Length: 110
Image 1: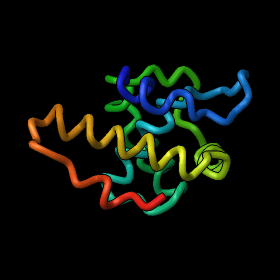
Image 2: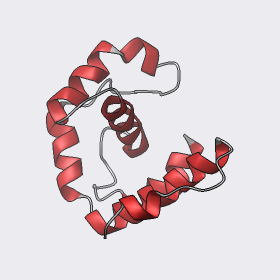
Image 3: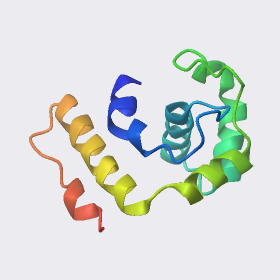
Image 4: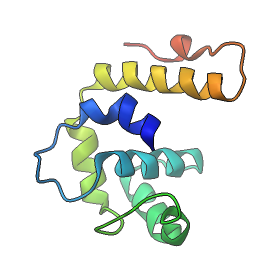
């Protein structure tokens, strides 16, 4: 979670009083998409089904965010800033996994 906070934390477009933790929302979305989620309803459903497992690594002080929360957040994100941060995150993941390099720069078009 520290890496997610370090890489994406500055991108949170919400008000300071937002109910759900920004990085926890991203973590759930990343995990759900890796498991085949295609939209915010799928992400929410994944969170509901895997809540017990997610609580092993996340606080989830207010439970799993609704599909509307995921949707609202993703609409507010600045696409180019998120793409740059995601590319950096993938480079970090590749490096941590012992990869010699990561072609993520070719995947992300800004």
